[in-house]
Image (cartoon, rainbow, N blue to C red):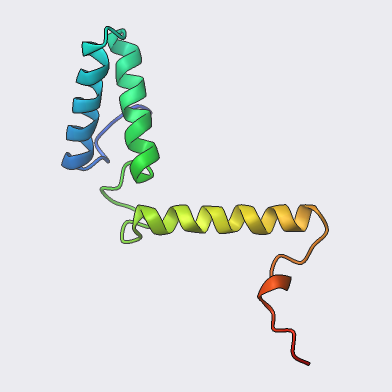
Length: 92
């Protein structure tokens, strides 16, 4: 797939982008900038083109939660803490 191709996006994602783009153009944003903002918004909302490929069955909300959890663990490790220390039981 060529960079910039929109073939991997669903019909709903394409429709959403088109409506967002029209909204920006109505507010007199340049067409090229409006398109870029529209697709950036669609990507932020849905995690990118989801027509096929790995992770298709995973909802965008679950992917976002996984990214947040990964960032939390990475931050804990960076600061010298065990990322799962708070989740362990204190009985012993």
